[in-house]
Length: 117
Image 1 (tube, one colour):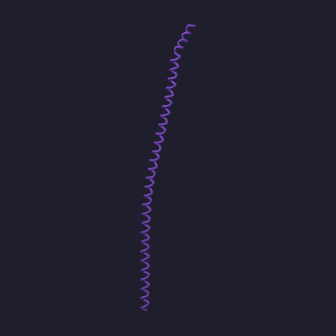
Image 2 (image 1 turned 90 degrees about the vertical axis):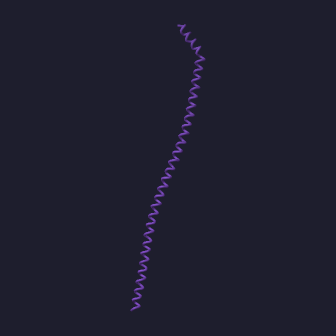
């Protein structure tokens, strides 16, 4: 009988040891789950920060490219404007030369018309 009592105590001790280990394992799993959640939050924060940084970089690159395109278009427009002004001045000078060249003839024609009346 005494052997049975010791056997029951031993089995009880083994069961208690198993339960203790299971409780410890459950605590470890809870800590691991909490750690994973913390890691997820840190990773999400890091991803958000990286996204914001990349967004700002993309905006900066887009602005730089837009400024380059605007400068290029402005230079082309100024060059075209200069060409048009020079062409206009050239035409204006040609008209002035024709007027100067033909002014004496025009005066003669007007005088002839007046005298012929």
